[in-house]
Structure formats: C-alpha cells, structure tokens
Amino acid sequence: MPQFSYRARRRSGELVEGVLDVADRAAALAQVERLGLFPVAVDASKGGSVVNDKRPGQKVEFLAFLPPTLRAQLQQKRKPKLQELATFTQQLANLLQAGMPLATALQSMTYLETKGITSEVSRQLRQEVTEGRSLSDAMAKQPRVFSDLYINMVRAGEQSGALVDVLRRMADHFEKFAEVQAKFKSALIYPGVVCCVGTGIIIFFMTFILPRFMSIFGSMGFNQLPTATLLLIGISNIFKNYWWLMILVLIVAVILFKRFQASAAGRRRIDEWKMKMPLFGRVICLNLYGQFARTLCTLLQNGVPVLTALKITEQVIPNCIIKEAAAKTRDAVTDGKTIAQPLAQSKVFPQLMVDLVKIGEDTGDVAGALNNVAETYEGELNIALRVMTNLIEPTLIIGMAVVVGFLLVAVLGAMFSMISNIGNSV
Image 1 (cartoon, rainbow, N blue to C red):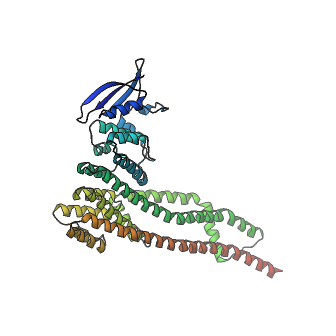
Image 2 (tube, helix red, strand yellow):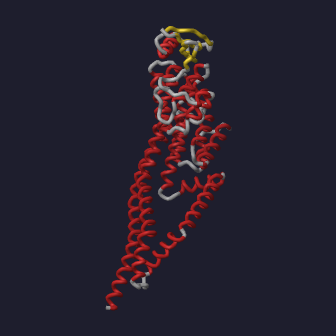
Image 3 (cartoon, rainbow, N blue to C red):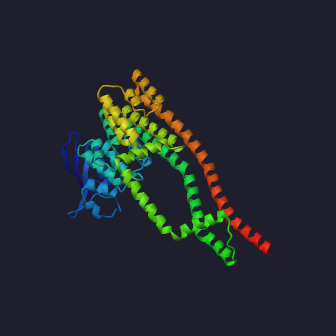
C-alpha cells in the first residue's frame, strides 16, 4: 500500500508531521481530518520522488511555481459578478451548515468551482485558514474577488459566531442586487436592439440605396428635386464623403468625455445629471436609494459597527452625490448625532426614507427600518422600470416611423415629380 507523508496543524496552531499507509491521496486527506488536524500538505512519495498536490489529469503550468497569492490573483482574471458571488457564498454556507470544518469546506469548494471564481481562490483561502488565519483575513488577500463589504461582514460573522447566517444573508443580498441589475439590462435590451438596427438601416440607405436613386434621376436629366429630397441628398453626401471626419469627431468627443468623467468635478456633474434625467432619472434615483438602504441594512444586521457600515456603504454606492451624503452622515454620527438628521440635511434622500429611519432609531431597530426602506424602493423601482419600458417602446416606434416616413417622402416625392414632368412634356 502506498505511503503518504503529511504536514498538518492542530487547533492550537502547532505544526505536526507524519506518514500514513492508505490507498490514495483522498483517503490520506480524510484520515488527517479524522485525526482532528487541519492538513497543510499531503504528498505521495515513491522511489524518492515526490508527486505534487494536484488533481488527476491536471497539467503542470508555470503558474504552479508562483507564490499562492500571486497565482490566485493572476488566475482570477476578472471580478466576479454578483450572481457568481451569491452562488459561491451559498455553497460555502451549505457546506458549513452540514457540519464541515471550515478548512474541509474550503477544500470541497475547490471541486465545486463557481463560474467566475477559480478553484485557486478557494485553495488559497484554505491554505491561509490552515495556517491559522481567520477567513476574513484570508479573503482580504483576494481583493479582486472579495470587496470590503464582503470581508467586513464575514469578520462580523466570525466575531459573533454566526458565520453561516451571515453567509446566507450575504448570498440573499447579492442575489437581490443581481436581480435588480438583470431587470435594468432586460429593460434596455429592446430599445438598444431597435436603435442599433434602425441606425444600421438608415446608414445603409443613405450610403448605398439613395445614391443609386440619384444616379437614375441624373441619367434621366431630372434636376428639379423637392426640398425634402435635396435635404436627404445633402445628408447622404455628408455620410458618403465625410464619414472619416464623423468618426474622428466621435473619437475626440469620447476622449473628451472620458477626461471629463475622470475628474472629480466631472463625475459629480455627470452623476447629478443622471439623477435629473427625464424618464431615466427616477429609475436611477430609486435604484440608488434602494442600494444605499439595502447595503447599510445588511451590514448592520450582521453586526458591523454603524461607522464602519456607513464607510463601506459610501464606498459601494457608485454615485458621487450619494457618496457625499453618506460621508456627511458618517461624520455627523461620529459627532454623536443620529442617522436620520444628517440624511434629512443632505437634501438628497426623500422624506419617506428619512422618516422611516427616524422611526427605526426611536424603536431601536434601524436595520429593520432600512430593510423596509429597501423593500419600498425596490418595489417602486420595479414599477418605474415597467413604466419606462412601456414609454420607451412607443417612443422608439414613433421615432422610427418619422425617420422612415421622411425617407419615403424624400424618395417617392422625387419619383412623383419626375413622373409629373414626363407627363407634362408629353
């Protein structure tokens, strides 16, 4: 029977080593964990050579020789999406709920690889935990995957001894945000497709179809074109002869916009404009109010101190106006004021939200009040999204009808004029 050498740590953190006679590496890991140890490394030795820890069929790559933290960051090519984080968190909560030790659960997570989060992340977390670090400290070394919001909530769960409950609440939190994002995207898919198709058709008509009509009119010696047709020909000539200039202007405009957006004043002006946009502004505001309340509520429910919760919420919110209000609220709370008072003084949040938070402070249940606020504005957001979609569809149809009607009038008007002239000459 093959021999496996192992290194592991006791619960006290003491490092121990030994040799096991077992059938395979999986059995060796199981035996080490049955001894009440946290495995650090399990290697199979045969003929003086060591077989490295890897899955069957796994190829040895150059990344395997890099430090674990750097290897995890390189393999994790992008930040995971909210739904991917929710799935990862729910899986970990289910394993811990089943009674698995944390290190064993993280080992199992390497085989339950979540889309968007590589197994190397779970492997590195397990390595850190078996070396005696807390899960929150291990996650802090993976900033590309785990945000400050995630790390602080896990730390609060560790301190309160309710890590599983905290993980389940976080999974629900990310799922709610992912659902809102999905509704936004679905509401914009139809308008986006219609605009792209319509723009493509118009450009094709102006650059290919219309010049052929004009060549027909010119070959027949017809030069008395209606005003609409002359206007359309002028626009077509601009598209045909100065397309490069239009692309250049577009590139310059994008560069200037990006530079403006990169400045603090520019970001604030753009965020302020977004909140005041007709039709879209209400949807954006409702989403921001719900996101602010939901994030702060989730942090407070999981035992994060109020000042830390406000700081994390300020970092999470993508809007500068709301960020400033959250920062002023945190400064006011530091000076001993309530949350509702600075929220009201900011003139950013609606009065209903302020009143509900004040009631929560009076009753000692701020988290519950914020949960009511989040549910209220999430419900209003669903209604606003439906209204926006219902208004966008007929608006686009009318706009496309006007454009197509103008094209038909311009072309058919020229044809009718030409036919009329031919009839008069006969």
